[in-house]
Image (tube, chains in turn green, purple):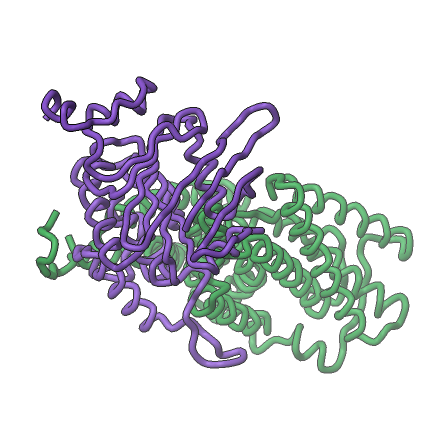
Length: 340
Length: 255
C-alpha cells in the first residue's frame, strides 16, 4: 500500500494489460481454433470462400440471438425459450402468407410481435414471481413449442409449411452474395446496436448493475425489473427475426427446427466470456463466441473426421470457457488497474 | 434533523419506543447499541424505508413524512449501507454515477459522457482525502473496504446529501481501513454535513462523535455529549449496566 498523497504511476506489464481486456479469452480461443482448422481442414477447403462463408453463416444465425442472450446473462437472467420462438415465428410467417395469403410484411410483423409477446411473458413472470428465469423460460419454451407444432399440424397437416418469399422481403432477409448470407449483415448491425447500448448508454450501465448487485442497483435508483423486461423482449424479437429469416432462406417454416438454438445461444454467450453469475461480459466477446461456435461446427466437417463428435467438442469447449471466465474474473478483481 | 418520540412495533415486538434524536450540521451523532437494540429500525425510519408507528420527524424545523427512500433522498438524507451497495465488477466512475448517469448528445445519439464522469468521480473521491484511487476505470471490486466507503460517501455528498447516515461503516474492516473511514467522517463533518454514525464499536464512536445516543431494547438509555462519559462507562452502558454519569468525583476515580 502506498502512502496516501503520494502519486506514483507504475507501468503495467504486457500480461496485465492483456488480461484487462474483457474479451481476451475468446479472442485467443478463436485465433487458436482458426489456425487449427486451417491446418487440419485447410486442404479440404476450410479457408476457401465457401468454407469461410459456411462458418460465418452459421455464426450469424446463432450470433443474432446470442447477443441479447448475453446481455440478459450480464443482467443476471437466462432465456431458454429462444428455440421455440424461432420455430413459432417461422410457422406464423409460413402459415400467414402461405396458407392464408396475408401480405408478407403483415405476417412478418405478426411473427415479430409474437417474439415480443413471449419476451413480455417471460419478463413479467420472472419479475412478478421472482422464480429463476431458467425454469420460467424452460416452461415457456415447452408451451410455445407444443402450441406451434399442434397448430401447424391442425391447420396445415404438417409441422413443415412451405412458402416462397419474393420481392424486397426475400432480398432483405434471404439473399446471398456468393456463398455469404445476408444474415451476416444483420448480425453486424445487431452487434453494433448491442455494443452501443452496453457501452455508451445509461441502459448499458444498468444492465451491468442489475446483474452485478441487484440490491445495490435498485437502491441507487436503477429500475432493475424494467431492465430485465426490455432484455427479455429484445431476446424474443431477435429470435423471431431469425425465424423469419429462416423462412426467406429455406422457403419453409418449421416448428421443430429452432430447438437447437435453446442451448447453442447460451453456449455462445459463455464461450464469449459472459459470466454465468452475471455482471460481467462484452459484446465483442459474444461476437467472438458465435464465431468460435461457427468454426467448430463447420470446421469439424472439413477435417474429415466424423461430425458425430461435434457435441463432445463443444461440451469440452464450454468447460474450458467457464474455467477461463472465472480465472479472468479473479484476475480482474485482483488487479489495481494503473496503480500497484 | 430531529426525531421526537419515535416508536415502531412489529406485532407484539417493540422495535423502538419513544426515541428522541437530533442531528446538527457539522456534527457527528453516534447511535450506539448492541445487536437487536433497534438501530436498524431507526435507520430505516430516518432513510424513508419504513414509516414510524408513532412520533414525529422534523427537517429544518418542518415536520416531514417519507413515503419512500426517494423522498428522503430528495430532502438531502443520504444513507450508506454496510455493504455500500457498489457493483464490484463495474468501474469507479460507472459506480459513482449509477442511476444518475451523465450523458451528452440528444435523441438516439444520447450517450454516456465517460470523460466527464471519470474526472468528476476521481475529483470527488480525492476530495475525501483518498489519493490511492487514480484510475476511474479501476473496478470497484479491486478497492479496499475503506476506499469503497469513500466512494459511497463521496457519491452521497455529490448528489446533495446534507444528512448522511452511515450504517456500521467499520464493521467489516481492519484497523487501518477503519482509520480511513474515521478520517472520511471527519472530512464530511468539516464540510458542514450532519452525520449519523451507527456502530457498536465504542473506540470508533469516541474517536469522532460529538453527540451520543445509546439504545437498549429500543429505548434511549443515555444521551450525552462528547467528553461526558469515559470509554469504560460507555461499554458498561451498552452492556446494560446502567448509567453512571461522571461528575468531577467520578473523573478522579476513572481518569
